Image (cartoon, rainbow over all chains, first blue to last red; front, side, top):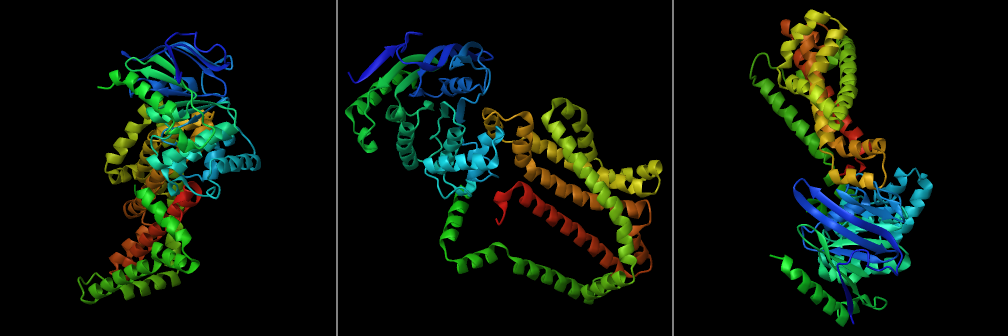
Length: 267
Length: 275
């Protein structure tokens, strides 16, 4: 069996793996508009889980609720057993529009999370340089964001999130503003980066291919109001050549299956 | 798109050898072109003065000669000494008060409702009309001149700062919050640098308005300083001296604005250096 598809069954999802982030009964309404309805999800430690769905399904809203950037109308989010009431040091966010300070160099942008925490300049610069190297931006430390391409800017955003050493990384459509070629390269690098660190990733995307390519688990959300419609675990071996994955039969089957499931929501 | 193109052109700059890099820098900083522009202006002035377009219009060379004459006899330094005191005081007070009030109004709704309407009215009003009123209340001394500078400079500084703070990039604010920035850190590390281009645009307009204020005050209230020098030479029909005085205050105002721009790029927006 290439994929294990689990129909929505709150609380029954993966009790075997230890969950680092638990979402219980999350609802969110904006006035009369219901964005999310009764979301129950567990995010296992050390895994990359994608939130996938068409626009308007509330996936970014859910991610921001987990980040503590917006409040839920009902329900709770716990990280490592602690209830989320705002942003915390165990979570770091990667923004869709990069959110880099145009007046700061790559080095200062990457070190900014540590700067806000009061880490000394020498120490935070050293840590930042290490992560700049990890995301493949060595030599660009003293450049300003406007001197970088979209893909490179998002690498800065990723390095900033990595450098605060959070356990959970929240990525909000990180590649949607990056061109296709750079996106492919970045996805490969992300797979490589993940194997190097034992972090939990929660990844919002609207690209089925992207979700299947990089995720251990995919949570499919259906729109208006956002609900969990399916949880899929693509069983794909990512150890070898990253290009091989795109031709992998399981990869192609999973993409097709998700598309068949999502088709009904696309008008 | 534009930034991408610039990034690419800068990347090619980096790849080129040193000699053509300096050539590129000359093109980026057209000092020579600026000098030519000034020379052209002086030439046209000289010709217009020689035609002459009016008996009250001196040539450029006469004006320059009069300028050095005024410096030599000490009348211009004395005039500036008396003009600069209220001008500098008024501009400094307006800058600090204006930016401060603007930030408070940008950050708090109460501040906005309380103060912004006052400054909108002040900016719309023909403020020069208030100057006789200022004389009536504060007399003809230094206080009156300083207030004249401030009522002209303050509104534009406050309103620009307020708008800049109100329109700070929302996504940077969220970023700062998500990385656990405190309110104070958000203001000093995100709001101020992000707002600084518009704040400085307001400061430049405010400083220019302050120069207008001090000259108006000296023409209308107290015949002292530069205003007096202009009036005095006009009354004696020393037009070259009158023009030299006017040109000197224009030059001073321009230099102040250039200096302000230099501070902005130095301190707040290093990424704009050399562009």
